[in-house]
Image (cartoon, rainbow, N blue to C red):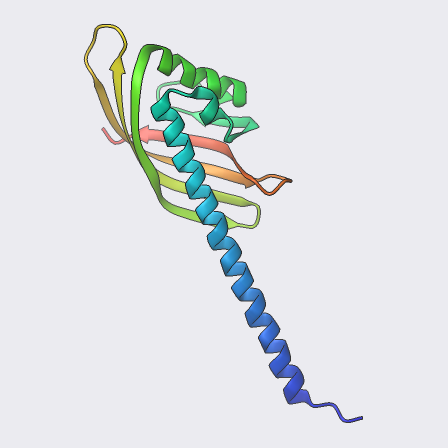
Length: 154
C-alpha cells in the first residue's frame, strides 16, 4: 500500500481551516450574546428593574461604582440598583465599544450616559462614564458578569 502524503497534507489543511472557521463563528456568536446582555441590562435600567439587571451577574459578582463601597453578590447589586430606582426615574444610553473573549472569560469596555430624574423635588442629574465588565461563561454556556466597574468622565 502506497501512502499519498500530498493527499494527507491537503486533508489535514482542510480540517485546520474548518476548525478555525468554527472557532471564529463561535467567538462572533459569543460577542453577539455578550452585547445582547449589555442591551438587556440597559433595558432593565430604563424600566427601573433591579432584578432584571442583577440576573446578569454571578452570585459572587463585584460591583465597583464610583464614590461607593464595593458591592459583592447578586443580592447586594440588586439592592444598589433598587435604591436608585426608589429615588429616581432613570434613563440610560450605553453600549460596548469593545468586546474581547479568551476561552471562558471575556471583557466588555463601554460608555454610558445616565439621566436621573428625582421622584420628589430636585433637578435632573446627568452623567457620562466609561465602564469595564468582566464576564465568565457559566457551566450551562451562558455568560454572566463577574465584575462591573465604572467612573465618570467629568
